[in-house]
Image (cartoon, rainbow, N blue to C red; front, side, top):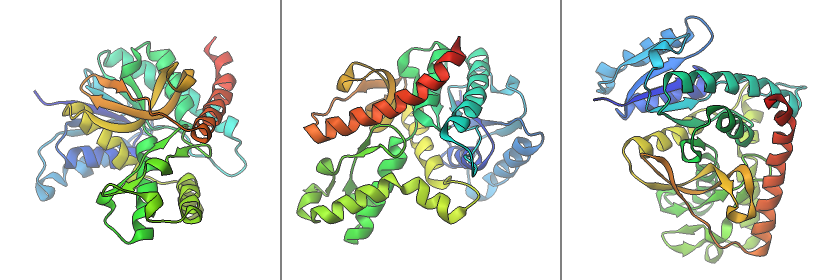
Length: 311
């Protein structure tokens, strides 16, 4: 029996997710979008790449959730991008409605699924989906840390002119300006980063990782990143569907871990067939703990804005 993944949102991130999931033959894919014709057209296009690329999966596009029934994983990428003049709160409330509706439909048609959230502001959207889905906390997961870590690893590899595959790193915290790249734990083939680069260079790379999304937005002018975000979401889908038990930084619901409660914040987790199978608590030094608390506080501010909408 083939696995089935629903991708909600057929924009750049969603369509690339569908393409990558198909390319790795992880599952059949249903691409859902409110815009008539777009998911159907993109789905058909990806399907027709199969004979050339050599993958045998079915991909369909739909404007309703009927075809998504009994999905194993639902990846929610739908939402509005931030436009000039939009405050964070404007974006928050617009995407709250999108994620609320997508979650309701996903739960109705696929009550046993695992939800992966990609829509921004990420940590607040995870909280929204968790409240609405009423799923156990291991089945609602946010994609952010993998992307932020990939950016950090990229910049370290570029700086040292080494293979990115030799670079190990971890980014914790909320997906935004307050994220916490863990420079102390970064290494290259086991060599601590601090032995390879001076502190000023490490600080510069940390800041560039924090600004990774904004840097791309600045270049594109009319949109945001989608190749790396879709790759990150696909890594999560693969670890779940293949029960790989990869340890990845993801937004998880914390109940006291790291001194944080009732919030989704990026931490290292084990991802397997049940979703989050374990949350790892790393010993943090004082400055790291303070930075993580600051990040959690920024997430809480957003949730305080949407809480009244929950009723």
